[in-house]
Image (cartoon, rainbow, N blue to C red):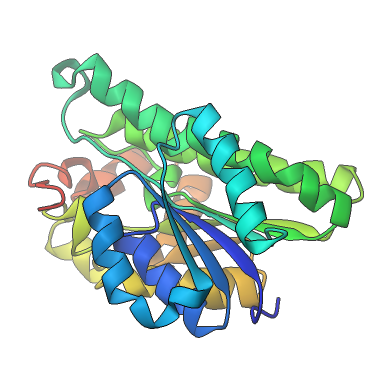
Length: 274
């Protein structure tokens, strides 16, 4: 896909992966509609990206509120015209054992990571089907391929995002709308941001090193998902070993590999953003 003059919506776009992706999209000549719930982050992003102000729109939006999502979708179309690309990036994680995590926290995890993504897809997909053109990029996780202790609900939502993305790809094909495309992004732990403090052990880090920056994922979104139209992108690339090992190893041996790499305890040092 050629990105110049494309109109893009980025959820959670004022910080982290969302902000890094917004920057890259602006550099490619896109117009970008940024949705974020954090007003302070919006103001910081607005100042940082001031030189792109003629192609940049900001909206405070709670993506877990379907009425806000549908209202913001109307606003985006009014401001930019047709929406070509939706980056479903908004995310939330609360580390901890399930019996120690509040109901509010795990419910918010599902609402932000999964339910909101369904709302935004519904908000734009009819227009894309009508044109037989459009692109959804959904941020999943390396944890969509295996279980991880102390983030069971987060992991469940990311499995669901991968399944949703693949199912929607087949829905578009079944409807003979091959021009509407879907891609999922599967990052391992980042060294900064919402997963700060999470890490594998020494051997695990050799095989699956921390993603160094949000821009690594933004680069994958822009260059691999959108430009090359790849349907499933894993970063670092060794994340794909999880799929291979799960497919060929007996369950008990696969579990031993997870323990050997320290994945089962990788959230024990989690601090989160700031």
